[in-house]
Image 1 (tube, helix red, strand yellow):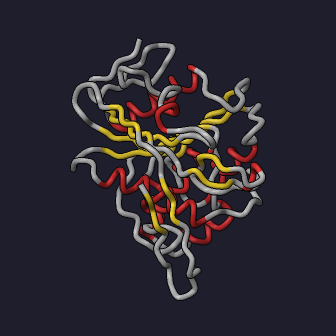
Image 2: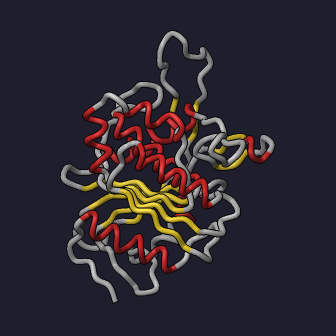
Length: 268
């Protein structure tokens, strides 16, 4: 699937990038369909394998306590293959270009908008009454958090309207692109403030993460809180690096079940 970045005005570049998204892996809900979550993989991964650390074949989150959330449909897309500055221009799957994973690194807004729009389009076809969410790991978490700011502001960075509501956001070992300008963008908009105060966000980060520094994840959470995101939970895992652990997925399971109000879920 391709996404041709739309013009955002007379100042746009005449040559626009076209992004070819890879295959999308879908895991159907067991039982009544109550919620749909788009889960976004990390840099260099793909949709089918990104589901494995989070969901098992029974459509439940993998958990040391076999926690089941049978009402969730999981959509796991694959990012476009593109040159990535972090790897010296080597091409791999990436939701956006990144040269340095740090608070001061420039943001690839064109790539972020394209991926956020792709995710929103996947959610826009879900049945009415189904609760919608976005989650991800590392760069996928960054894309999920960026999508959240687009939803709250009501538009993508290019000015196009954001089309869907979001009921849950999960970011594992990630960061917030655009954190430096978010607070200024929020100022003066009562509607954005209302949305920010209500959207539920769960962020989890390992204290010894050597890829996305813990301090970057923590500062991202602080930037969201400072901008008015009141319903935000930030969890720290002392011995965890840049990966997931059962304790963390247990946390995600419990949080999603409570936040989405899932019926028929059970834990052991």
